[in-house]
Image (cartoon, rainbow, N blue to C red):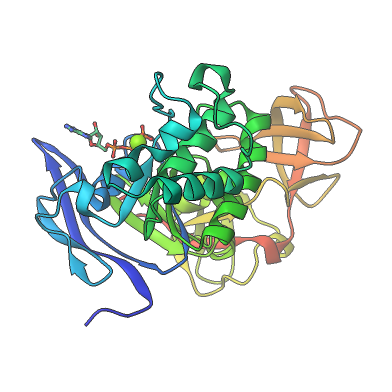
Length: 355
Ligand SMILES: Nc1ncnc2c1ncn2[C@@H]1O[C@H](COP(=O)(O)OP(=O)(O)OP(=O)(O)O)[C@@H](O)[C@H]1O
Ligand SMILES: [Mg+2]
């Protein structure tokens, strides 16, 4: 029996395309009314999972259940879902109202009802008064709002959104994020959203599922995924954290690139020994005159408020990122000491198959 709070149950879905295994035994449940984001780098199976829910792909194994109905053999147009794509695909010969009304007309909804619902949904996406415009008379952001209105007008149980903002420039994207949050709240629909942008995922979602090459590594609230990453991949991809290779001696001592980590920078790690990852965010790292890890500045970028540095610590190949809010800058090539508070450090075991 499925949990009645779940509207979508994805159970053990595997999707192969020839030799490519795009999804490897993925299971995920989405709760009614939830804003769930699939987050992961390019080519890691996000669209494939969305398309399996929409019915555009037939999984090699596993099943998709929506509203307690097994979707095996159910074509896309008979599923209680709609999809919004990266680029809005509006009919050029129809105006905005005609585009939004298209699906309703196909389902023979009465014209007074069509007019009422089109007006309602255009108002929801803040396009009142735009009904007579053609697609080419709209900005990219407005076109995407029309696509959103068209997907919402027949009140799907689940709305699937595949990188709907990625073709827009940053300013419009930020505006549209606010709109999407509001539309999600006001429509009451369940949103499954795909992005490779961790900032967007954190800003929008009730829950994030992080995909790594066809498997879900971790699913949780933005705060859980950001603050408590369970793997180096999640730490670096979601939190943009430094993931630093280190050794623990089992007595509380940690060695990074041959340097002993000062006790105050280590957190509580006395039980681990052997190879570990030290995970620390650039925003909590800073410079000190003594008692830090020694290295050299290998990159400096001005960030308006403060600077973003890369510091190559002695004995390490990969630089560590340090973000500071201070006005005084370190210069390229300068010898520096890096520090961070021990309580902001996470330690993960190293030497797994993905390391
Ligand atoms: N129809 C197909 N035939 C063959 N291979 C496919 C097909 N669709 C997807 N793939 C492959 O499956 C893998 C996952 O693709 P998918 O489109 O799901 O990735 P994605 O995470 O959405 O990436 P992006 O962020 O670039 O959109 C990729 O290696 C891709 O090349
Ligand atoms: Mg994709």
